[in-house]
Image (cartoon, rainbow, N blue to C red):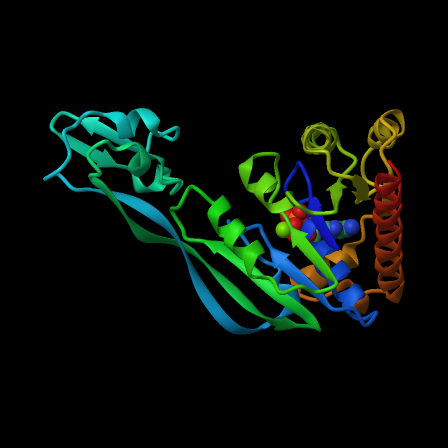
Length: 290
Ligand code: ADP
Ligand code: MG
């Protein structure tokens, strides 16, 4: 069972929900993995405090031109959607930070003049923390293309009963890479105009992807009722609400889980897990009856 925690807007509480949900599930005796897919600024490890057992480099293939064969025909540059390779005067320039490592340039080269060499763009750390299998992707500073790190991260997880994906914010490629193939997406939002605007974008993305989802309204008492009204109007399930709680911000700053703040939170996360399981099972039953 794969559950993503995502949001249109940043800072809504994804990591708070993802880490606490993972530990609550582990404390129910289940085998659970937490994947930090927010590879530009992963911070789940602050809360899960894993003992890191393995670190792996993530590489992408980078084109290298053999000028003894190259005729400057420009096929490579025409084929590259990302403008990562260009014929400039009497040379071919490769722009590593734009390259997605797809191999298209070397495939189309009529002279077989392009070789590929691995280039490190990030790393993956694996370990165990608070009874949860922990995997974190980290994009190197200065790199622009994060999906290959997330893709490598998702391939590395063993097959536990439950996997929680802590996604980056937004609705662009890094998010789609993180949430694709998951069974259910929890969208964490806040009831502010900005939060609602970005929630609508995230809902549009999930409808396009055809993934089942529900919403958690965090800091539910600080905004207005427009997020509730939008969810009702659009028939979007509200999975739960978390009030603004200064103790949450304080325990987060200390790198601690919410269970220490109030045992009620652990009960809420167990309830959240149970309702998601019910939804996924119902979806599977109705799908198999079609
Ligand atoms: P994201 O992963 O979406 O960026 P985080 O889980 O890191 O969000 O939370 C962002 C900040 O908001 C943290 O400082 C956290 O303590 C604070 N926060 C999250 N939920 C609440 C809440 N219900 N009450 C008070 N502070 C909260
Ligand atoms: Mg986060």
